[in-house]
Length: 264
Image (tube, rainbow, N blue to C red):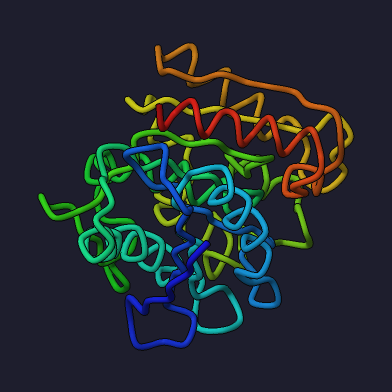
């Protein structure tokens, strides 16, 4: 297995690491987006075991780091970084001769939120400007790399509900720089619920014993997406929040199978 690290910006947290299999069995790439409630103390080391495992199973994996709340991230920079980091694949794929026919995101927890949110990038313009004084700079032209599928692992897919539940001691408002009362457009723009229905398939996977992110985060999103006619599947798997990112756990192996299915 080979690995190559690339910066997509000048900040120390703006990078991705490509894990290449000995022989790729797919014509696509997996973008691994780590969680940690968007806070700076959690980094891409959480995604590295997954990227390594995916490469060992024939799938090129792009382990993406981004600025988080506490190290220059939060609104709007975390969101800008995720889009820019995915778009960097257009350069990286050219260097390594990778096909981008399919680009599937595997995101855990807060990373699941960012993955599903990024999959809705083409619909963001319909929501209008979320914050006139700090407009999100996003790339939405022909050079952008668009996700073709997402596997959300216990993703925070309903930000309004997460805010009301005060998950992780106000993590949503911490990410967005204030409450929904203060920044209503910002909160709406950042919520994957606002971009329903997506045209790409999404698997919302959740552990049956998850005490960190309530399963309602997946069920409420999946229910709304299904009602809107989106290609969504909800899967409950045995295990807790971190079983989904343990390469030895059946919960993770199910996620890996789903990624492989989306890549074809």
